[in-house]
Image (cartoon, rainbow, N blue to C red; front, side, top):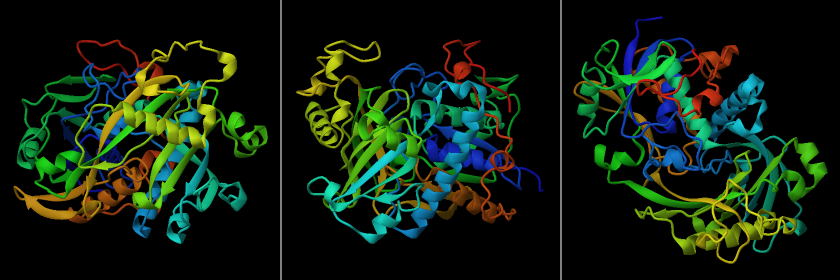
Length: 465
């Protein structure tokens, strides 16, 4: 093993944080990693706001905070299918590790949950089918069982992610591994480079078992390489005119009654070994993307979407859009409406029943969210690029709405580019990261992570690595 290199990652979304973990916990090499980003995951979110940033709701441009998210591949090319499959492999191992730890006996605290997924396509296309036919329990649906205007359908088992739990725990794990973060909106890559080893920067890192934000306990060395993973920020930071927002609006429902048993029956729930079920629909007119989806979080709340509006910067929820979303999802899963035996009773976790976003539908709305996905004309940019200030660069952005489902595959690909650029040893084939490969993964306890206690302005305590 060679001496440590210092890698700076510009971007604090799921791609940036996952890549940081892949480098810090490299199976062979040794890296120091500093994240420089205007937005970072919170360590104390328990509200319906996805990930509060210093007590306020995350900006819509911080797309990772607003994601659904489910692992249902819509890959169009083999390279993307590979990323998605590698990510699913890691997520299954993370789910197992989290489930086996004592605190995860409370299903409401799990960041990952298995679901019985139903997929519909308005047209049958072999490549689209191949992006999902590898999921566990994959079965084609009989033609006669399909809804109108649907040409093909299938069911399978997959994982959904509760983002207000998953993303903060990734961030906490990054800090446990010795990662450092600097919350700052850099105006250039050069500024991010300078800030990453400045003795005056305000750095978040683990100190005596707690995540603290203060002047660094030790000055880091000048970076050996920079990974640019700024999401939508690439438009301004990198001057990439191909980057554009893809506006997504979702409605978060409180519907704990909408289980696999309620929707599909007890036998399906038993065979699939799932408590929750999801559904989504792929429309040819939408470029082969999912225009309608239902994503259970595993705690009784369910994300319903959505929209894909390119170059739309509006961050305010639109009532008419919520009505349209509810119309579409209820056509696929009418059980999302309140059971009649519940009458007009209100659940303490839900907002007022007369929420105008509900329209004519009898649903319990917990929140209406808007996020700006980091799209890019021409697709994902994941490659080595020209040096900045004589420092090698890796570019990793433009994931649009598929950041979570391809996050680990993209992280490992970026890690290989770093290894190659710095003449380091590549991670072995099929490896993920050291703790996961060895079965020694120790992750934060959310009952500690999600407290409001702060000591000297620091974040809550998390378990040491």
